[in-house]
Amino acid sequence: MSQRSDIDKYDGIVTPKRLETIQRVVNHRQLDLTLVMENIHDPHNVGAIFRSADAIGMDELQLLYTIESFPTVHPKVTTGSGKWIKQNKYTEPERLANNLRAKGYKIYTTHLSKDAVSIHDVDWTLPSAIVMGNEHRGVSSEMTELADHNILIPMFGMVESLNVSVATAVILFEACRQRIEAGKYPNADLDSEWIAQMTDEWVHINFKKKGS
Image (cartoon, rainbow, N blue to C red; front, top):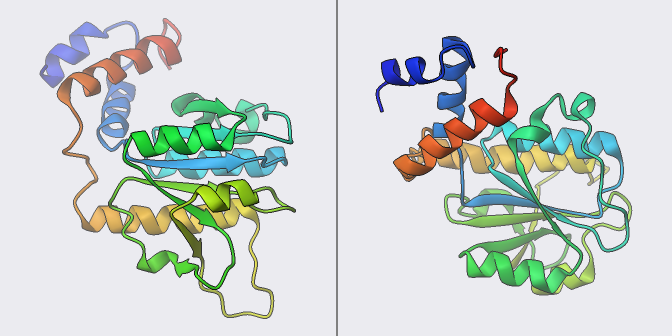
């Protein structure tokens, strides 16, 4: 469908400028890169993670909550990014891992161990699922055992740790950097029918009749 026909189709529903933004964002979506939030508790961390995920074009997040309650994704905390990203909820680590592997993902846990590899040595252009753990307990032993690799962020200070939302952003933007270099922004692998469907969904579901 041409840009002109798109503008005509959505006339009165969304402004041409907003439609252009929607189309640009949809065309940059990364369908084979996802993040697992495991029992992350603090709402500010949850919100910051959603914002980083949206910023790099992630299409969906996996919420694995076995101890903590599922978080409330408040628009003021996520600055609205929560409504652009699909959320899949799980309470069983093995079921989550099986579903990810069925889709071709390799699973990476952020866990300090002797076998952990630097995030800069991972090929993030391949289908990847990144597991970020609870602020105090980290990634669970169950998910660590189910993962393909443990990863770490190289650090050179006295305190070798980062806030979980900061660590998430560092990892996601390394993946983004690699994918930019590989020509995945915009994403030529996206199906034209999927692009049209997502554009239509975002226009009609996420915007009021008068547009924004």
